[in-house]
Length: 97
Image (cartoon, rainbow, N blue to C red; front, top):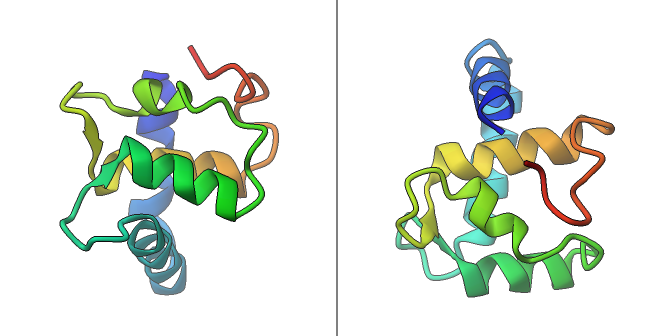
């Protein structure tokens, strides 16, 4: 999973301004209460409302690098990278290791 985090960050940092704006909008769409973090309930709500119900909600724990119970922008960025790069994490149904 660490390799995915690093790849996502590099993809974002080297991406166009438009790609960075799309990633920021993606994060904001998940952070429903605007506190700068995505809670597990916000994550699950996002999955269900956007057709990602096939993703195991426990995948949240793999994204939460610092284990603080919420996802910051960089942690959500990894999820965004996986979503926009098909085949990046074929094991998402059960969660990436």
